[in-house]
Picture 1 (cartoon, rainbow, N blue to C red):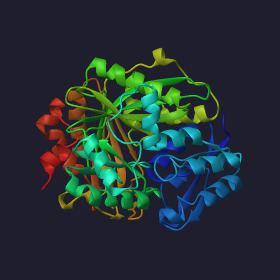
Picture 2 (picture 1 turned 180 degrees about the vertical axis):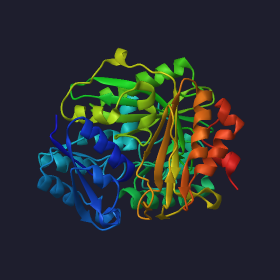
Picture 3 (picture 1 turned 45 degrees about the vertical axis):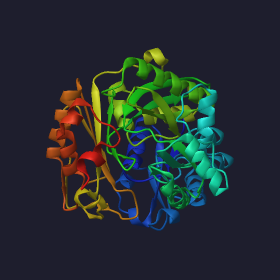
Picture 4 (picture 1 turned 120 degrees about the horizontal axis):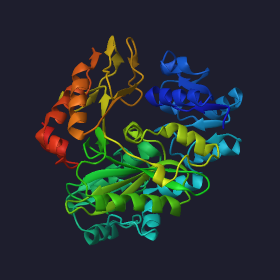
Length: 447
């Protein structure tokens, strides 16, 4: 096992990793920007090192500074968390070239699965059903128009690198194709430094379901069940739950087998998430792999009783998986709500500022992952996620009622958050019955 790890991230995920490492008797080193100098996650680490200015490009994306900090601190490994450098294969290579383990998959596996076009090809070879689409784009405009027509409208333009809804555009007919293509390419280049995109058939009113996998360096791969991430806005997830309230056992088994097969085919190790769309007839389509820990990983932890961060660290240290597939058990129902510092009444506008009052909910079966506290600052330089509320109860109706109580109990002042919006979502009758698709929010709550 590692003696000391450096955490190349911030906020609630940095806290989450520090706590898991401490329980494994591993020392932790946190890097931070000037903006985060007084952040709560620094107080629990054994050491903290400033790596630059407030903007991510001047700090959390500075690979050389992060590796230098790890070398100065004598860290054995670097945990990237999610976002920032978590899916950067070049960074993983630099870490290992410096004799520092990267807590994540190999750079080769990351490139294969992190690039969506390549991942589609691997999935196809592994007999995993994929959304009809292209393997890339031709240079000629007329050929692009012809390709889109062959796939059939509506289509989706998607960035080959990255995720989180960036570089994605839905196109209903050819009149919007080239303008949407240019916008997607520009957004992808700005977000990921890679403007490559490809085309997919747009699956109308699907459910979005993902499978959590864990693999060791000996080729053993297990799944830890599914999470339903259907409730989202503009491809950004808002609420996640496990198990999915609406897929059949046959579909569930198919998703599990496909996810494991795909990860074995790519030589994957560590934590990863295989994402699928489920159409109205229950047919599943592979869409992408997130080669990192997910924001919503606590949902899986609640229903399995397993600590995914500890499992990640152990796998990177060369340890075998703690159990076989038969050893994984699920109980009850878990729901996570993302609390963002955003004004839902004004287009989900980010709301930076200082929090004067922070009172999180509690009680049996309630977990809050957050960096928030009285006097904490929500920075305009970073993602607006302030907290995650996760509840675990014997049944889905009980979990919904528990989450509603938690949202009523949660006090964050004076900045605006998505709590009032989430209350409305959970009170909607279609959410109660699980009768939702990825357009649910736009259809019911758009002004």
